[in-house]
Amino acid sequence: MTFQDLNLHRNILQVLAEENYTEPTPIQQQAIPIILEEDDLVGCAQTGTGKTAAFAIPILNYLHPIVGSKNKRKVIRTLVLAPTRELAHQILDSFDTYGKYMNTKAMVIYGGVNQVPQVQLLKEGVDILIATPGRFLDLHKQRFLDMNHLHHLVIDEADQMLDMGFINDVKKIIKLLPENRQTLLFSATMPVAIRELADQFLKKPKFVSVTPVSSTAEKVNQKVYMVQKEDKRKLLIHLLQEEKIENVLVFVRTKHSADNVVKALKKHEISAEAIHGDKSQSARLRVLDGFKNKEISVLVATDIAARGIDIDLLPYVINFDIPNIPETYVHRIGRTGRAGNSGLAISFCGKDELTYWKDIEKLTRQQIKVVKDNPFPFREYTEEEKTAKQNDRRNPKKEASKHTNKPKAKTNKSDNNSNSRKSEGAKKNKKRWY
Image (cartoon, rainbow, N blue to C red; front, side, top):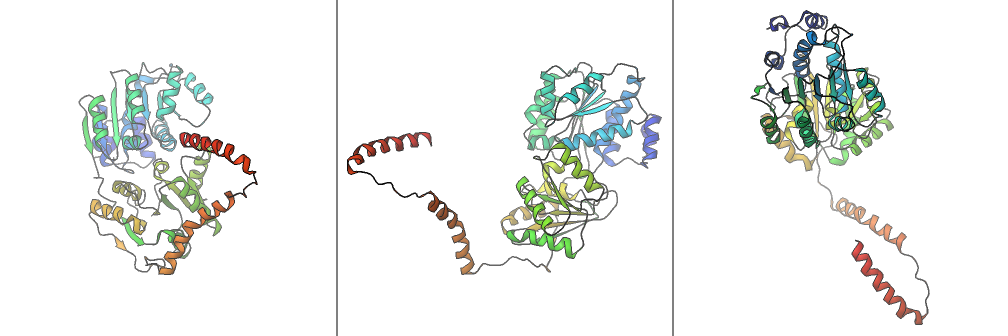
């Protein structure tokens, strides 16, 4: 099948030809005809399968004759809900690219920035609105959003919405929208809560599923280092310097860990930056652009922030922390080895993560190669090291107690009885408060 076979508008076909897209991906082959028929859809596809184009192309195809000329008043006809600002911007880029020769206008709204510029653009008129749930509800409450002309609702990365606690906001938004709409729900996984959402708000949806979540890209070479937890940073620095690894995406579990890893890399003069929820939007976009342009060698990211990262030629992914959800591992390494290119996924597994690693191998049905030539392998602590570690845990408390113990003030014996009653009362009050 080619895009020509899908009966798309010639303006869209011209863009696809310019982008050298000739054959639709499996999710596009299955989803586009369903969306063109205006049926509700539930699509299950992991990162990198082309699902953004799977809904952007048919939506633009539908809107083109309705939007008409530039002079026609613009109203919101399509709403796309996305969990992160980065993903919202990528969706906007897709609509702008595929709609290059059309008169459609798309924009994004999200929290964490001043709403005034967003409100101004809304007042000027927009056909396609891409929004994060929180900012949508804020602006709708302020009556800046008119959804009476809505035809398409797209819920993208629904499972990530669930993970981030946005699912209730999504339900609130759906209830604010016209019922005579077409609803498209896309998700990398299908937990029970997402199935319930589809059952509740979609009308006789058709289901499309491609690339089972348990499968990993064929051209991604995978290997794992069994490493002491405290040696992970040393191992990362060793690989980056000795193996000459560049343009690598490093996954960590927490924001704090991301910042610490970057700090350690910079001490060794390795170009690295972190991306996570505590970074401002401008900082996140600056870091992403620097990484894509190869000005930054190492990008350290949490899973939530990384959901919006889309880089076609990413050669390396490193799992600094092993995810506790095995499907997350598949999503992570799916960011390399795209579009027929080869990739390498390296994992650092500590002793406390062995259970997670076994779950990953069970899900993927693979015995992933363990690297034997490892400068920081598992080892048993000597008795002296165990004692030292125990003392390290105890010392902070001892040091704190030293600083908090103040010399007792001298008091007269006659004051002792009255003071003791006050202290008893203070103790009782303290117990009540804490």
